[in-house]
Length: 101
Image: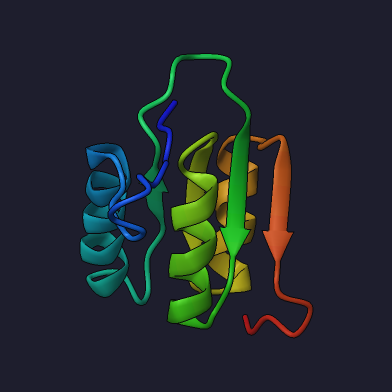
């Protein structure tokens, strides 16, 4: 589990874990407009979330926030998200109501 905190003197300073997650998410989402990505190096038994979001910025934000505590698989459209759910049933699916196939 990664923690984030700020110090009194540097309001935007955070632990290295946040920087590492953000770097991995940026790289993976930038390179994956049409494929699924998996995030979060957590122990077995950690709850898993599938994020299905076609807006890359919103998908990046959701993955960044959720990958701190959960294993996350992200999909850029509904068809890929459905494939992810069929491959391995997640604990939760977070999806855009108007998600494209």
